[in-house]
Structures are given as structure tokens and as C-alpha cells.
Image (cartoon, rainbow, N blue to C red; front, side, top):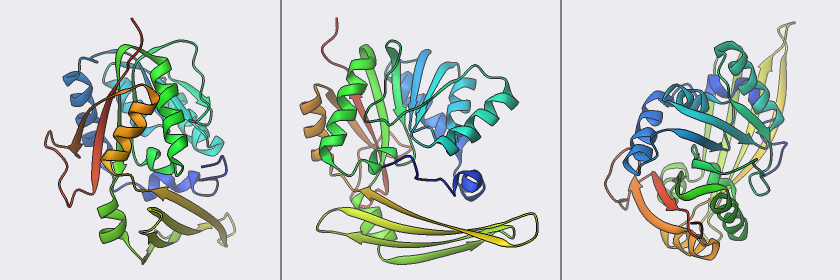
Length: 253
């Protein structure tokens, strides 16, 4: 994970992610938050990207803070904030070192952000920071791409898509021995003269077993509460492609 990730992609991220039903994802996330008693208050969106979900959570009644390591992604998020007029605080920070001015009612992290923590020690570090900045008994809810998705759905494949004024080629490779998923992005953006500019990016994500998440949570002093097959209240299945994890703050009174 570094601040250069999504440097070329930031301008086109929302266009290429238009297949993600953010309103439905937000609805599910809000239902989980409310199920665990977090109905309003200050909420941190960790790895907020271009702020689409952050804006939706604000509309759902939460006071939002967004943290992301990519300056370019946050620039897009702040453009959205200027257009919507919402009072969202955006912070350019690495989630492994983030700092807040006080505690928050809840923390969320959606769309694979935790998968980018490829070192289990970094996962523990983030959990410790989240635990520190949560209100007593507050909840951390995040999603993960599963090993099944990386290994059986994405695997070793190449995906190409042409949007007219932009296109990308995605080359994917999963290493089952290290649980690391590598993908290379070649992005092509049309400039004002009708020529295409190419950007190349390398991304690495890690597949985590639920047992590893439980162990990291325990090491960080957090309480593992539940794991769900995405967009349900059912436990993960062998072929779940995305799961949601719920952790609870411990240590404060």
C-alpha cells in the first residue's frame, strides 16, 4: 500500500466502478451498523477512495470523516463534497498511521481496503489504531475479498474494457502459497487532442482466512463479533466471494 496507488486511475475510478451498486452496499452497511447500535454520530470511513460511500453514509445520518492514502482519490472526493455541500472531513493519511482528533462512534472500511494490508502485522497495527479511536464498545465493520474469489473466480485471467474515451487491461495472478493476489493495470485515457495517454499501476492484495482475522483482532485487543456472507445476515459459505467482519472495541470504560 502506498500513496501512488490509483494515481492514474483516480480520475476514471468512478467510471470503471459504475457496476458497483453503492446505494445497496450502503443500505446493507447501515443495517449492520444499526443492528449493532450505531444509529448516528461520528463515523470514520477508512480507505474512503473517491468518497462515494462516504457521501451516502452522510446522507444516512452519520457525521463523516474519510481517510485515504491517495491524494488523487481524495481530490475527487473533495470535488464531490464541494458539489453536494456536505460537511465531510477528509484526511490524507495512511491507515497504518492514521490520527484523529478524538474517538468516533464507528469505523467502516469497504471495497477491499483491508485486503491491501498484505502484511499481517500491518493488519494488527490498523486494528490497534481503530480500537484506540473507537468510542467505548464501538464497532469496526469491514469487508474482505475471499480466498475463494481470488483463487477460483479471478485466478489467472486478463480482463479488458473499452469505454470509448478510456480503456483498461487488467492482468490478474493469485499465488496460493503466499495468499497474495497481484494485478497489473494498464490504463488508457484520451486527452484533449484525441490521443491516448497510458498509465501503468501494480496492485497487491492478500486473502485472509477468518481465523487470521480473529487472531489479529485478539492481538490488537479487539473483540471478534461476527462474520457474514456479504449482504446477508448468514455466516460465510465455502463459495462466498465477499464477506463482512464485525469487531468491537475493548479496553475503554
